Length: 287
Image (cartoon, rainbow, N blue to C red):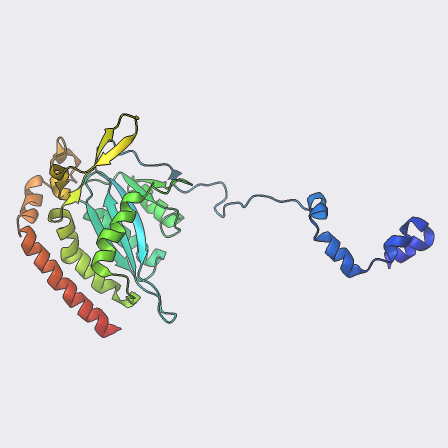
């Protein structure tokens, strides 16, 4: 070996020539050796220097049109993928629209996102998501850019940036659809239910709690939920000053009132319960 030849010509290498190759590899694993020879770099983004979305909490300033969005997976079973619910909610009015996709891919996500955005009666100005790749990607960013909608994403170590949509995932989707497995092939059935009656029930007939911030003697902000602040999302929207200015072109308060007054709250709840029962019967039959 090279060390043996060096030892023959120079006595200083005689001890090194007796070291086995395997032991040299062991020495290379030592921290002292690695500190001298190894160089570590931080992980680089796969998107290079082009950032998709801004890391910030949206500031709607009392204006509707800043929606939060998240996905809820309905589990896997025996290597079969479950359906994905896509939940969206406006931060100010709590207008909420839900859809479903077979898989969180470009093919399925883009059409549904457009459908959700178009479903809102007011103009959408902001689109906030966590850092999931189903929302933070070049295809979604390009679509939002064409619609002049600002894309933002949650900040690191700020788990409450998307707290509103996370709470709705539990109180709405999990409460009504449960935690059991639903095959991805039922996405179209779920969308018929969501866009047929369920979204209308959520926005025009289901009351939501709206917080009021109070500052205590220690200058800490405390949120309370007065009974008078329980309103449906549509009632909250109508309570905004000059609410008609936020509506999309061609839509009026009179048209929305007609939708809201088509059924009483109890009648709409019975319709949704009946359609959910039929939905689950179809799902269990397909499974």
